[in-house]
Image 1 (cartoon, rainbow, N blue to C red):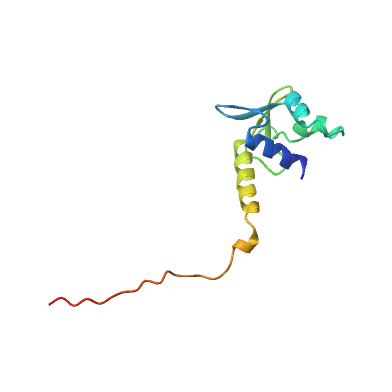
Image 2: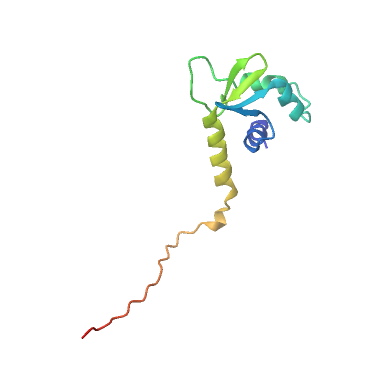
Length: 114
């Protein structure tokens, strides 16, 4: 599982970040504390590298955070929604889908009224 997926999972489940009126805010300090198992220096550049560039408002697969101030970031709400949708789809095994269309069998009876 990628660090992005782990991050989005933690945000979606409420284990990481704080919810306010505009979405989820996460600090670099919280992030480092939550992902203390990541030993590489990538932990320091992950959040800054995911910041949406100035003038852009829509998330991409690599840019999905707004920088509020130094060390504080807001997760784009659409990125959270996209992650939730992708997780939902991935959890459904393909064996549950088939191409067979089945219709309910309704039996009609004829009544004669005199």
